[in-house]
Length: 145
Image (cartoon, rainbow, N blue to C red):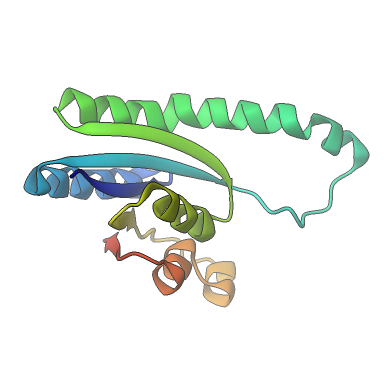
């Protein structure tokens, strides 16, 4: 049986730390698939103009394509070149909810993410995606420093 690990990338150096840890874990486990995920933060509750709504689908598709090209595909390529089993996904939504939903749908054993050093006031008031994921996830979450 293959163990699945979901690796959440953020497009920054911190995502690379999560990827490094996940690849080490995958080597220790052996039969392991790494599912590299990038979530484009998106809220269905944001207010948009009629013009924005008309362009929404096209813009979402462009964002997915860009994220796959710039973040996910290079990460998956580096993992497969290193001999690991990996594939990638890009989704829109709330980061914590989306990573948790993907882990449940895929039957993942664990989610691996990295914390960022962003200390903005909004993070202090509303919490970070990482903190929300840790509190809400239905599988264990490893947070890489």
